[in-house]
Length: 191
Picture 1 (cartoon, rainbow, N blue to C red):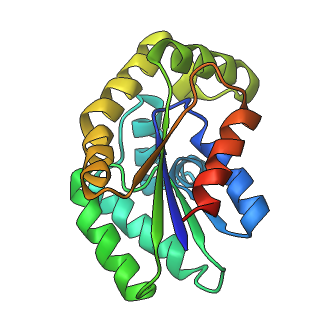
Picture 2: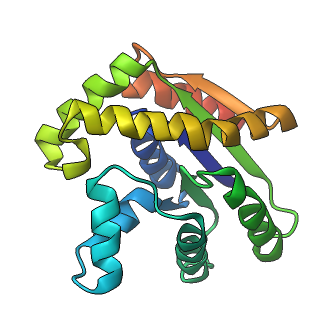
């Protein structure tokens, strides 16, 4: 089984994905972490990524699809993958699903959405900015821009999976990471 986990910036999807990785032995693909690492490489590609990240913008679909495929192809022997926030846009869905069918025919993909209210997201991200020194988390304006982009581009992806009946929603507002984890495990263990 593969797992796709969605949520707005600050929803805890990275934290939950890491717990899935540790508990179930899955390979965690965080496009955000991967892109931040790639942005540290001072070539033209890395500088382009850094510029987009620093302004809280999404990476173009064609680039994200290529990066995603590269990561999976380099780690094909793992028992499963947890995709942290991917696919992020409607155009990425077809490429994502086609790729999964080619690489993992007959393997189920469970889709989980972590739903958190916007003010709590902003509060979490501002707190994270202090701890992790992340430029994309530094200002309320940047955070609101990132949340707006999530709503515009990724909520339709969430709606797509909800319409298919494959989406499981875990409400994370006013809950601890452990409480959310317990609900995430219930979803995984009942699929």
